[in-house]
Length: 267
Image 1: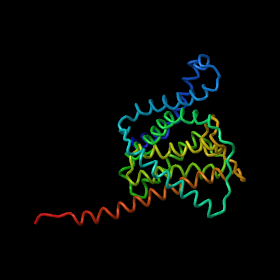
Image 2 (image 1 turned 60 degrees about the vertical axis):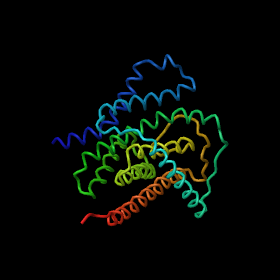
Image 3 (image 1 turned 30 degrees about the vertical axis):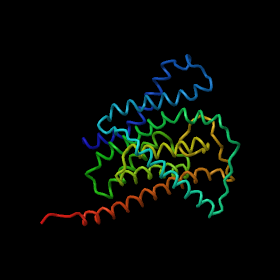
Image 4 (image 1 turned 120 degrees about the horizontal axis):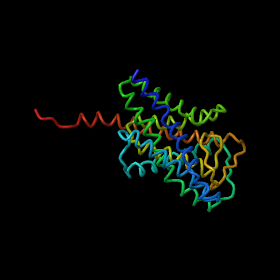
């Protein structure tokens, strides 16, 4: 019964905190003070993300990770490789993507929401991978990833009703990226950085229908010949990135035994 209660808390933590923060900000009448200007559209999501992350950090302070800059460096290196592989894949398949006029003023909006979004992504990973990983640590190797995916799926359904199969695929692709990284032993900061980068790409390219919406102007609107192509591109990026993480994981596991065999022992 205690185990079931813990899992219930994990599933409800993010949706409940999101509702509480949104309700609290609405009751604070803060919108009357800041007005309805363009900059308030940037202030509001940052407030919701930071306040929500603060509540989750307090509730799961045991699982909240220590900050490390190395994770960001590793994430950017992986992101460059994943994007280059995606470009090659699009070129070999003859897929045509077109972007609208670049709006460099939107870069300010993108940078202004980046810190708050990263903190929220870190809070999500703390709950969905940190706390959930701790509670499922005694499960069989095959059952643990299924449990992590199950929790993430239920939380997603509570936060974003699935209206199409492609939306479901997009959401699963992002969660698979995090779960593969967790199984590979990556830090929560690195998992959050990957989630953060994918969501920044979604905002920068204005990709609709992927379960993540921020009301800011895109840096360069992705104008695809097929409306669903943007969702497929985002999902492909997550899948390719998952493969890169898995390959690094397999290589590290194969190198480790050979290094242990070469360690000199005293006779």
